[in-house]
Image (cartoon, rainbow, N blue to C red; front, top):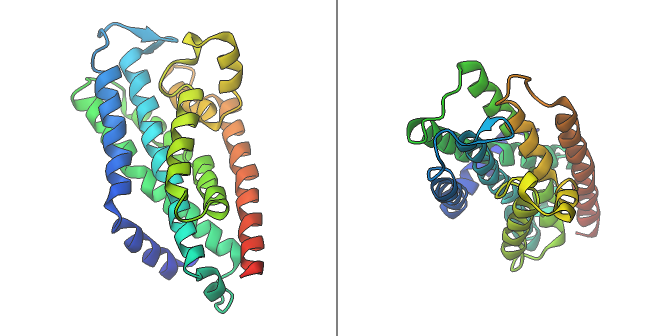
Length: 244
């Protein structure tokens, strides 16, 4: 990791406020529509229904923010940034790590805002340990989506990266059970859901709401997605840099 480059990247990304606005407002609106209208005593899988929706919408916001790094990468490729990187001491691994860290930082505001909204207006009651666990696990759940952002950034062209990222985010969230509980999906959709990283990140985050604690199997699957997608992203970076 290169700290100076990371700080530069953060400042540059924060100038594009549309990314943060979308990743925060969209899950809040969905939470208000699907969560705030639920009966107070409703439950889903042994979890308070409004808490279930809160975590799902927070994950949707964090994954949207994490995947937005693809737009930055595509713009850098188009501007010849990779050619410049070949003349600097910055190693490919450090560049990829910087992008992942940037994605994780972008994932924090949606999580905090949705959780705060759920606590204040949705009256979601969790103890301090549960809040901390849910927040940490949900934040780590953005890792595979940061890797997806890397892959999209090195595959898509600058003029198409935003539509591809937006469509991918919607499809992954919809098929992964973030908008509709998987138990309420048709049988074939349940099998499709398990093939998406959103299913496992949602399962990991929501499991922190139960008395049994975090689902370690789901967490390992999330880490597996991260490793595989991160490897693909690194390979694409090296291939793209070699051609520059």
